[in-house]
Image (cartoon, rainbow, N blue to C red):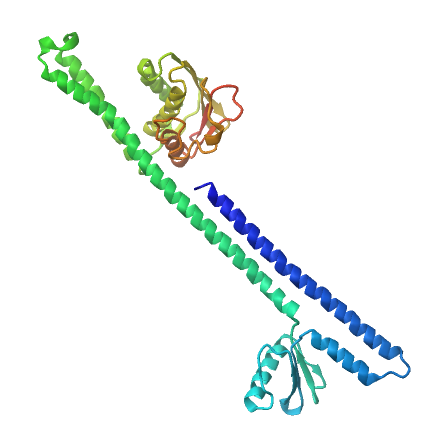
Length: 389
């Protein structure tokens, strides 16, 4: 549906443009006809002046006939502002009646407001308006403004609809992601609860109370971290100067312990430049953003193995974190939408991880995240975090 909106707007634009071209072409044709008429008038007047014995009456009637064909509104008034003659008025009026005289006189005053009448101020006056071609030209700015307004209103409606749809997808994806992240520690807690119900002497591996308590504490800590992450997404968190090196070290420790389960056969390599400047950030959210990008790489290498390289380095006024993998890369069809909520290349994914990373990096920290083009293999993401000043 989203792809149809640009096509519909393009069709509307072409229709409006075609209609405008046809309309203006008709006006151009009318103006050319007027030019031909003026040439005929000049020819008649020149012939009358050159003829030593002209039939002046015939010539004048010919000129009047040509002018009548132009349908120019004309009002001829005499002494006392009496209307003597009218031609091609935009309304019907009987100048033999008082009401008709008043109506035409009011119309003549409107014509005079645009241009002064022709004639002797003490005798007859000729009040005239615009020819049809000029009257049509007056509407062109309004037609253009109307077409532009229609296009803008439709475009605004499309953008608003798309944003509402994106927000709904984001909330749906967020709810699914929350359920997914809560599901693992909750299932683990349920398992440890079953273990606690077994007599200590019958537990597998001779698990003691201390081991079970440590496992429960780890799962509870994970639940607390998940709830804290989602709590921060809905508000503006406090940002403090922090070192990316510590962030990467914690992420490496977290992932190394889980690589046998998350990505069997995957090698993880971390490289952080010395003396990196501090960045202004929130460690909980930035850790989540990096984790999502690395997990995206792990998913790409699932079942095949490979390598994930994470490198942090200084880049002008930013600290850049580059994450690359040796997987199959990103499908060109979703490359431009890879950070949109609900967009995923996995059959079982919800497309929220990279969308959250962009929200954290760009919306919260004022940085940017991008997928590099032209990688020889796999995919390469770069996160730019502004240096703390």
